[in-house]
Image (cartoon, rainbow, N blue to C red; front, side, top):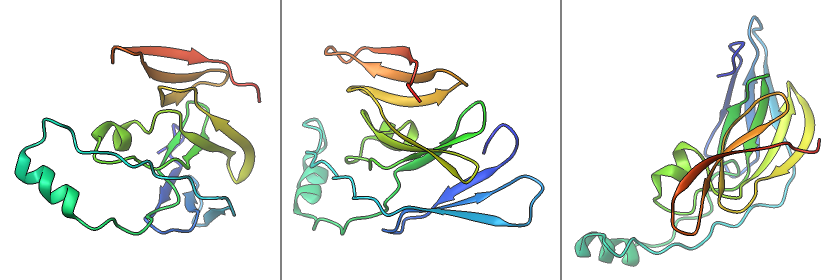
Length: 152
């Protein structure tokens, strides 16, 4: 939900399709793009996972490729950020705040503004009019809040 009350949703379809419901409008806009799918990285269960759960995860068949959109988020000024990078496993942070080094499509309403690729080890937290705010993990797994000025 945006600061103005707009709503964006993306389903679990393999097609890139985001539905945008604008405040005060009965009309829904569908944002669709033909893009190459992002690869889902292979991940291993955490070594500290219970042995029975670990064995079940390793034996489970791999699911077919899921959604084309990892998550959607509005920033402070109402731009819509559509994350094309998909979660890489069972890491709860991937779903909650997004994938590290994710690739995003950015929209203002139904107008496409372009792509933004986050730096390595950075997860998208939000954006202001001129700054992208992220959560960066260093080589010791310590987290820091960082800000970048995208070149639009």
